[in-house]
Amino acid sequence: MLPRWYNRALILNIVVQSGIIVTGAIVRVTGSGLGCPTWPDCVEGSLAPTATQAEEWHKWVEFGNRLLTFVVGLVALVVVIGGFRYFKQSSRRLLAAVPLLGTLAQALLGGVTVLTGLHPLTVMAHFVLSIIIVGLSFRLWFVASEPQRSSDRLLIIFSHVLPVTTFSLIVAGSLVTGSGPHSGDPDVTHRLPFDLKTIAWFHADILWLFAGVLIALWVIAKVSHHTLSLNALNWLRNVTVLTAIQGLVGYIQFFTSLPELLVIIHVIGAVLVWNFVLRLSYELRYQTRNTNS
Image (cartoon, rainbow, N blue to C red; front, side, top):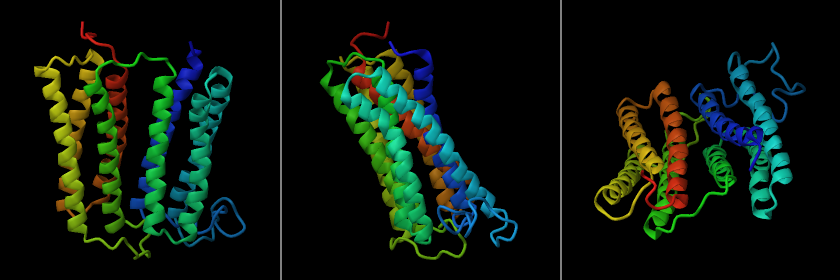
């Protein structure tokens, strides 16, 4: 059994890795991506913002996000130290190292993003890498408790299809953002070469595909002999409700020309959907049969 403090550190790691995605979105929609125009310094010759900078309050938004990287890195350091202390398997030790290695990679990628003038591909890579780190952090937390693998092959298949579909949905959403008006700085005009309406509908098509997967899982849960645990049913309900809300917000923001507040809400929703789907997927993959009672 893992000590309670380390289990809490694993959960905290998921929280901070998810949280910095949201703060990154705030940096972007407030046009603060170049609030610190250099890297690793905020401005030439100073790690922190200076009173003479032309970026006004934007510098504090971007600098605040950079400071959060140190918090994320500190939690990740605790995770890797605990992982090498408590895990014997090399695969789990490697998983424990992912948050720290990923945070270091994100810091470097953040520098590339600034130095390339917020090129949409580097901004997109920054976001997608965070999603991957959250996914692997979640896997570390769940498998650390030595769960028993399910014997139901169909549910195991769904446990893989759900996160793959969700990841595709999130990547498609980042393509929409990379093609839209929120570049991260008002002076940055280069965007991805996609028609915004077309790529937005492509994103919506994947959403409906994801909704179809959820409906199929509900059918399996209600009318077949494949038994979902009570935890799995609860998380399936959570994912379904959140997906409906997220889809509604997505359509509203599209038809209202992507207002900043709705974009931030949509990013928060995407992060929550990703975490909820990961939890559901592991409940399906590791549950035992007939655990509803």
